[in-house]
Length: 142
Image (cartoon, rainbow, N blue to C red; front, side, top):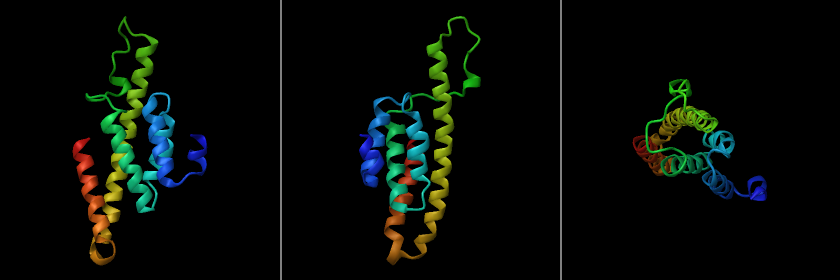
């Protein structure tokens, strides 16, 4: 797995990162927050689109619980029954919520930067239209 992450193709790297994160989102959070998110910010449209698809898949099907996330400051830290396990999960939930906000900002920037190419429908229009539809769809799903 580590050889694919270091010397594989972009598609292989993203697939490997996704598998690693899906195994244990809590323990592999750094891969999501650094590697995949930085790929989504790249100027390369193909790499950004692949990373955005992978991140959306993780958010929709694995990394996020099926409820509204809370910041750590909103958790009942002062209660009697709070254990170290609760604290770890709450810190992770806080980090996921902040990462999700960063991801939405990346989607917004990508959406508007790629929309420029719609003015050249013969060259880039179809790919950009597909990308913009995906951004809109993912924003509505998440």
